[in-house]
Image (tube, rainbow, N blue to C red; front, side, top):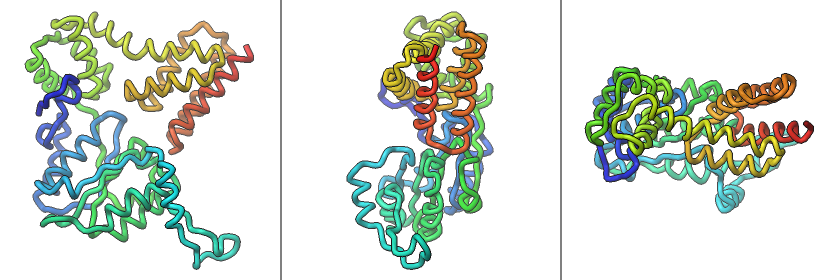
Length: 348
């Protein structure tokens, strides 16, 4: 399981389904697909950071065997499209012949992600003796209205390629996609499985942690192994005998402090500084938008604002959180939130 890497969360990434921590029922179902050499399109859903992508990759590699390198592809639906890719998609756009009314004769726009990244992979048959290729698409909900176009590709090229869609917002996935997929909910790791896995890491890294501290680590990380291992590695830099006090020192310094520092440029109304700092935090700590909303809410409640100001800030956060759950782009919603907060700060 281990590889030569100084970062523990990378070092202990599972390479097979058997190495996946817990989730026995999910692993059993996926191994059944492997034994039958066939499976439907899959939709993996669950909380952010719960391990959906690792499970999908381990399954795909075991299913494809030695030919996985040429028959497996992972795409991120939320990665911005380059200027060149947009240009290529524009060239490939065709004039509509079936439309009537105001849309008649207009160019049929094809989303660059579908036309440039997805279609070239799914339309070519698998190389080797395997029945079909596998395409993994992360953050699928961000495609929004273009999910319909993706559905058509699934139907047209289903015999060439099976799709594994990954999302933490199943409410943002359209019904035609859901009806064409087997849905697998990936639950958080249970404490027993979590403690067994952490024990393996402790032995290999020659460090110790007492039971109360282990329970604190589980509760704070919410069963997310990557997050827990990162905190464990930072704690090991302080002491090789980790207790709750060491953990709290790391936890308070690695996240809450960063979010608290966001309030300084917000109070100054410096939108540009807040946006730059927020993007850096999300990149370094891999926070979801919902984690940012929750931590901002906690800090605002603790901060000595007036009652009316607190209420307005909380309303802004609640509105951004609602729009994010509804399937809108997280970066846009976060930018909208901090712009409102900065404008409010300028007033008082």
